[in-house]
Image (cartoon, rainbow, N blue to C red; front, side, top):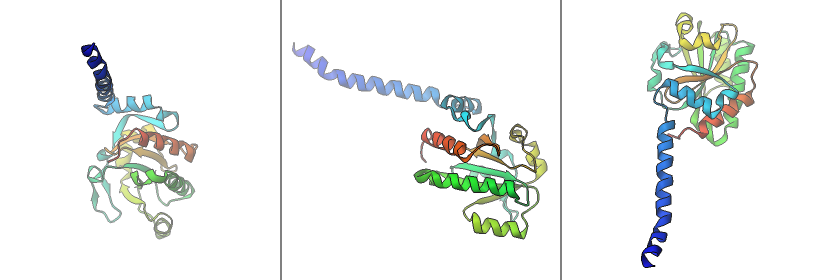
Length: 207
């Protein structure tokens, strides 16, 4: 009777250990080992229900980026954060400004998760004119602005799959490791982007 009682007392401990082992094993199996696994995991999580999945994902490190001052920008050296990127040609006309406004509103609506996101304007081609520069400084002071040559952007693996054209900006999401994985067309709403970001942040560990 004493031995049986002792076994019953230890049963909850064995259950806890067993559950922990199952959770760790599941986490190991779900952990993406490469870009294909990462895209597959995104599909399982359902984020492709709104944004369009880039499969395979595209590395931002493949783009030769510079600041507007002409200094090289190394994307892998940036702090590891999720980023919402607006790729647009200059001048920043109605479509570009609509995309910047939409991403700013979504950023605000993320609430306590807003600090985990950075917004980026990726200028493809000519530098902004004085009027556009003033607009960006006044309306989007927290925006990171980068530049890439149009011929280099056109050769980037994601550009064709996003259907990017100089006349139509594209919004895409980049993970903390620098992989572009989702993109949004002008026909999609801010609610689509917000839901996908909330979903991604929910399943992404905080730094």
